Length: 112
Image 1 (cartoon, one colour):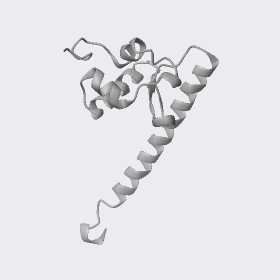
Image 2 (cartoon, helix red, strand yellow; image 1 turned 60 degrees about the horizontal axis):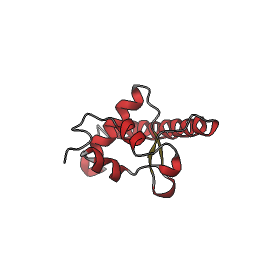
Image 3 (tube, one colour; image 1 turned 90 degrees about the vertical axis):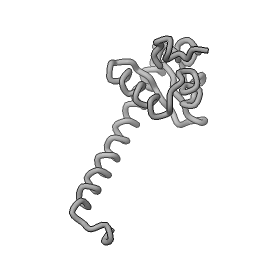
Image 4 (tube, one colour; image 1 turned 180 degrees about the vertical axis):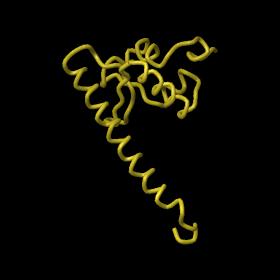
């Protein structure tokens, strides 16, 4: 059986075809990985690429977490705003971690 990735489908196309068009019908990362035939890391990169190209793939940690396409409603717009805020917060945490790690660069490993 060919995977969706082998067929050339994108994450957003899979979400659409599977009916993941709101948070209640989200697909887990595991489900998407199986459908696409990719690793969790590759899935993250594919989603990152699609988001960078303007595709509003939302994610949530609620109820087990998952990915979905937001509906074109005020609720969908709010879901996109929440997802953007979560991504900004994650980026801020990663930036602070990188700064802390950089500060340790000159230290000997034994002193850490």
